[in-house]
Image (cartoon, rainbow, N blue to C red; front, side):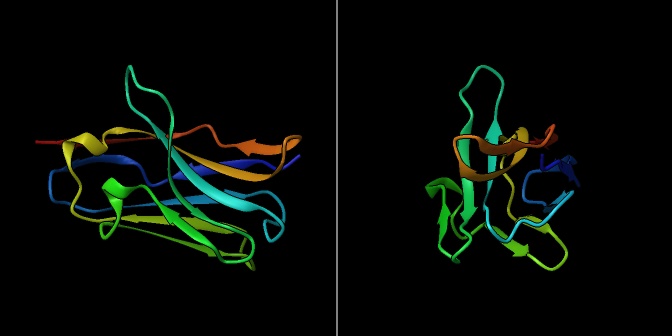
Length: 115
């Protein structure tokens, strides 16, 4: 069982920056690592991915503003968020995925962007 703990959320003004960190309790090198977010009243959406082979994906609305990195030696992933907008307000979740039965989630961290 892999445990994921997110940190780094908070309140920031529009245009500001935040960095989120996800720390895993075990090795993540075999997992695709993802950041999801869920805003009030909306479905959870995939924000960014770095696969275990290095493939990447970014949600169109965050491209050129968010950068995801992973450190398999430290079992951590990061999400650097720049030029934040009020519409980025959500609970952000770290996810580690390898298969349907190896699919782990963190508890989430709140990001609030004020206008």
